[in-house]
Image 1: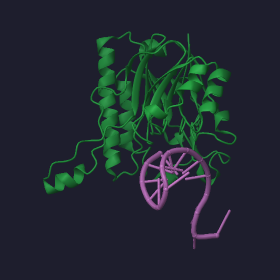
Image 2 (image 1 turned 45 degrees about the horizontal axis):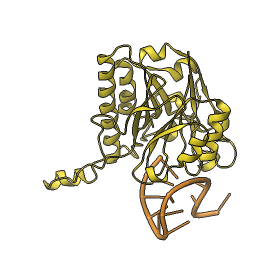
Image 3 (image 1 turned 135 degrees about the vertical axis):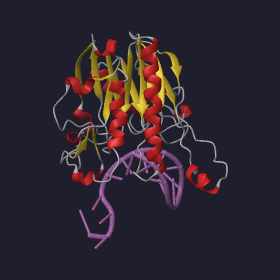
Length: 275
DNA sequence: ATGGTTGCCGAGCAA
């Protein structure tokens, strides 16, 4: 089975390109992030015509995640248990002693069982800035996911679980082109890196680096300032696998060519082959 | 060159 993950940065702007990728690369299951649409706006027909089923969750023009599969889609979950929402205005309410508004649940996680693998398409909050409320949200979100994922393994040590997507964390200094511009920035801070590494403590293995250990191997390049031609990229898309699944991974590929040409997403697919 | 890119939607936000 071939499993891939890709932040497509709008599935409507790129439906043809995503279908072409699925067919050219013979992908069985694709986890998609940043569809940027509601469920009723998703271009289902383009994927169904190519022989794929789609499970999607999207509430607005922001976020949105999907699993696209030609080996079945069962037990779809449009959030993980305990998934935090963004508590807009929580800090203000705390200061004034007023009741905080209800947190806004965002479409950032979708789980589906495809071909015997529990696949989670994950779009980790960006964080925006170290002083921003979205940064605390990001850390809480990662910790809540880790707690759930640890529980899945405790319940079934032989579980085949893939936690794949845009983690918005560059775990190593060599996962960015240069650390200097990231001074005081998100994606590289110690708490974010610890929250990411905690998935290893929970028993998972990040199989993309196991198979592609080369430094400065990127999955994302900003649209601005000729970042791609200058290869000023970041490695922020990863695949944590449960032990039983990690043992099945034979190859991992990053399809750098998908960043080329007109109409490219700013991220490229990460593709896993499973024995 | 006081910007730089893209996508949402149709101004300004988010990444």
